Amino acid sequence: MSVNTKVSEDGQKLTISIKGRFDFAKHQEFRDSFGQIDNQRPNAVVVDLKEATYLDSSALGMLLLLRDHAGGDESDVRLINSSSDVRKILAISNFDKLFDIT
Image (cartoon, rainbow, N blue to C red; front, top):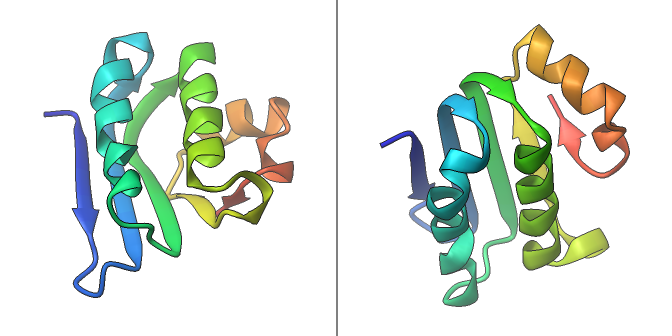
């Protein structure tokens, strides 16, 4: 599986890890990974891009859907461990204005 999820023991943080290409082929897996937010509302969502090798426009759209689903401007969605190539894509797309990227 190339999209893994983990909820913290206290239920306050959902971590979604992406492995490989983050593109339309991962759409359903990614949607399923944050669908559980409906059942329990974590305070924070972390998307770990450590093993993501590529992002395309559909991945950017999926990240926006996640942000909206988590609460929009009031949400705490962080993108962590991105490679320099992935970080460039995020910067060009001005995602640093919408997400906390580390």
